Every structure is written in structure tokens, then in C-alpha cells.
Image 1 (cartoon, rainbow, N blue to C red):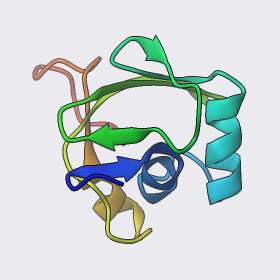
Image 2: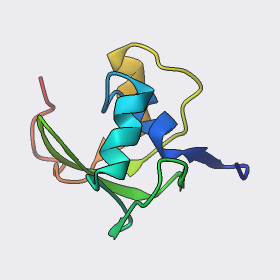
Image 3: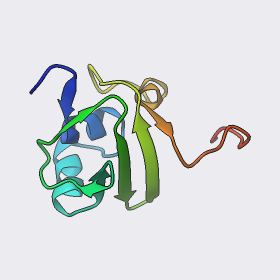
Amino acid sequence: MNPGRQRLDKWLWFARFAKTRSLAARLVTDGHVRINGKRAEAASKGVAIGDILTVAAAHGTALIRVRDLGERRGPAPEACLLYEDVDRTPDDPAPA
């Protein structure tokens, strides 16, 4: 993988959009993830800081911007630092 990029399935798992890396890969292969408006074709596709992802998971659809690439799958507060919610405006209250 190029420096400054990370596999999409790995990033989704680190950011806690899927419980396992294989489920993250399935999200991609089933067509539930877009990168910068284009459907991600493979779980090995690289994501970079600043990319906009649309993730249509079972619990809802999220429009997010990648803020950082993960080093590990840590606790939820750490995972939240990997992205910012593009749908949420600054006046909206923080999610509970």
C-alpha cells in the first residue's frame, strides 16, 4: 500500500463501522461503501486522509471524512478520532 493510504476494509474495522475485518470487506464487496462518490469495488482499495466515505451499514447511512489512518482497533472514543461526520453541522449537538 502506498504511504499515506490504508486498505478500506482495515480502516472501516479500525473506525468501528464493522465488528470484524471480514464483515468490513463484505460491506465493500456488497456495494455499501463509496469513496468520494464512487462505489468502492474492492476491500483492498486505499483510502487517504481527506477522502469522503459514504457507508450504508445495517444501522444507518453515514457520510464521513477520513481524518486519520488507524494504527489499531482501539476503544470507541479512539475510533471516533479517525473520522468526522460530514452530515452534522457545527450547531448540531454531539451524538450521545
